[in-house]
View 1 (cartoon, rainbow, N blue to C red):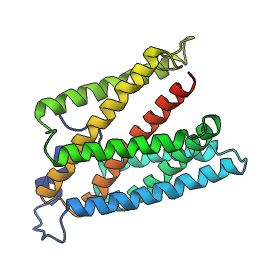
View 2 (cartoon, one colour):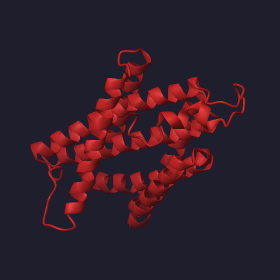
View 3 (cartoon, rainbow, N blue to C red):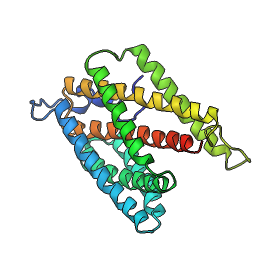
Length: 248
């Protein structure tokens, strides 16, 4: 049992499987510092992509083609990279830009409806990230097998619920519980945010484990891309929650 994130699988980071029996020195292997640096690069590229679709909305242009296209292409890149980790050096920057297009579009549209919601969502996301990082770094929260199992089970349940709810809307007149701004809907959003935040602990642990096992250098891009996936998920869920609260 590992992180719900397809990038954070123990067998992917296992040096015995990715090194192909090639002895590597410290400059050829994954490090935590290297992964952090690459995470900042991906974050910068994501912001650049987000600025593109945000600017389109500001200029009264329809960003939906780029917003939806970014989400679809980003998903494709995630699937390819999950099976071909060595391509992460090239595909992770492309993923960051695509996700930026997606986030920029939905953020700009929601910010017009609920002014200030984006700043609130960004603040909530990074505060959550820093708190989780501090809790992990100082061993206040430790990733045990039981902890990992519970988080993965909850994440899988969320994914199944979303998929089923989305599928039912195509066949019957059905409005999922998480739609609208009812107390149940807000409660679901809070639960999802908590699970997304708990996934950060699994991500930190897998990155640290990959570095300790001496994974190849390109796994820094792989790890950074995986962490970005979780942060994007967390940000979108904060946007969803804040928009519900703004309707009250």
